[in-house]
Image 1 (cartoon, each protein chain N blue to C red):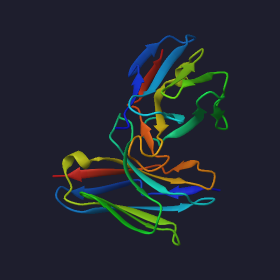
Image 2: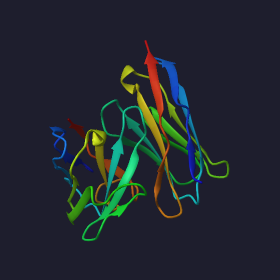
Image 3: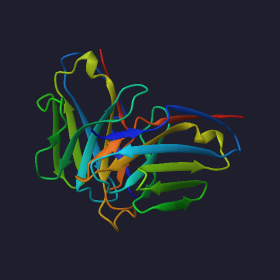
Length: 121
Length: 109
């Protein structure tokens, strides 16, 4: 149980274009989803917290107009990187928290998707 | 401020035992997680401690002392596939997860 998928697993795009990344919880309902960014050899950096049906909460320094997050259902959240630039190239990872009993882990355990490697040329 | 400290890198031998320490200073405490992350992959959940003591899960065990702000992850009978980064994360009083920078564990034959 507690499987989270992400699509695409990797994407290469031109500077100035927008890229959408999907995050799905496959076998449980995720009340909250998180979006992280990770640069090589660095730790996870939380970008935003997303609750189903409400606006995402962005961490300090993360531009909400550049990184659009939509959490339309209990199993799907999307991150759109708008007008991407080479400095946005990174490993983007989503995670979802479970409701106790549905996925078997302790409350608020974050289960991660496999990540999306974004390269902006 | 909130702080999670872990060693940057550790080396151990296949078949041996290794202990990865984590100390934390956070505003409140609502649980501590250990995750494993292989290079180029997303983290996977290993363990969760909210009460003092040792939690054992096969070859992996995790210990917590809340009074000392200290946890460790113990890996026994090391295998080459255990080469990875191990992330310590603490849930603070606002239930926000504060992440350590991770410990890169290198296993040698």
